[in-house]
Length: 100
Image (cartoon, rainbow, N blue to C red; front, side):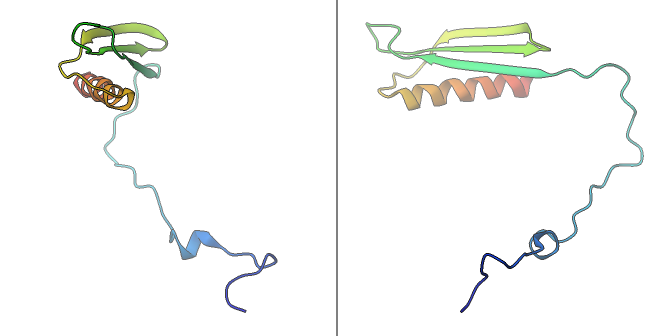
């Protein structure tokens, strides 16, 4: 019988992952203030414009659950499926996060 039965215990920490260690830089600065948690929400409202069939992208960026920036704009492309319009709004939100 090849393989393992239910009674065999395997030590996956050394066989698969090796012995990983976390290397911290020695010249890193100590944090000076409190931690800030950033949160982002996005959504696409499909077929918001009935004439052109375009969706509307909405993004909300929060710092410690306080809204700090919002964005709402009609999408440049006319998507026929919800997945495509959600993907466009996700990409827009990620670009804003990179800018922040």
